Amino acid sequence: MHTRLRVALAWLPALLLAAGLAALCLLPSRLLTPVQPVPVQLTAGQQATVQFDGAGDAASLSAKSSAPEVAQLEPIMVENGRLTCRLTAYHAGTTIVRCAAGRSSSAAYAVSVVEPEPEPLTDGDFVASVSGEKYHRKDCTFAGRIAAENRVYFLSAADAQAAGYAPCSRCLGS
Image 1 (tube, one colour):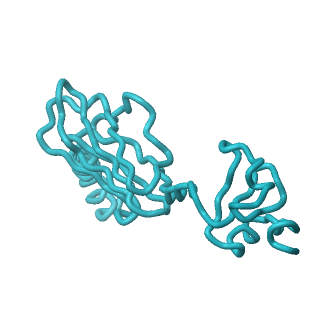
Image 2: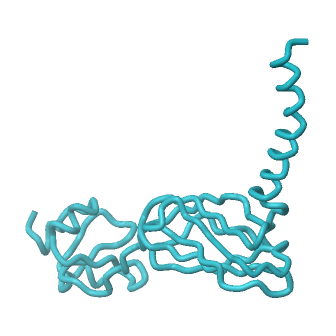
């Protein structure tokens, strides 16, 4: 054999051993498993508690988010081998979160954050039925016939038209 090849082969077991030791030091030894499913969608401003088994008695806790402006996962504590984290949603978007406790790490989870639905109006100058096609002034005879649970209110005629309603010919003269 050539001298260079013999030298390379002599170093090969040492390199493989070093790479294996480095992998043991860098890679988590166990996978944290969720106690309940990790939420896949939250509303902005919402928080959820997420728990993982398999944390042992780890002293070092960490969490990562690919888009911290969207949502963050914050480790809180480890008790009886269970890691408890708080997932907080901030703004609409999607992020990937994961957490670690000592040498144990969770899988990566995709979390989608949506903006909250606006609260429905409980009063306005115009009213329509959820199943109707026309909108009315509040004092219109036809508006008075709409059951309270079926009423949809609008602040302006433009809002009612944008929602797909046509003006009442009796009270709005169209």
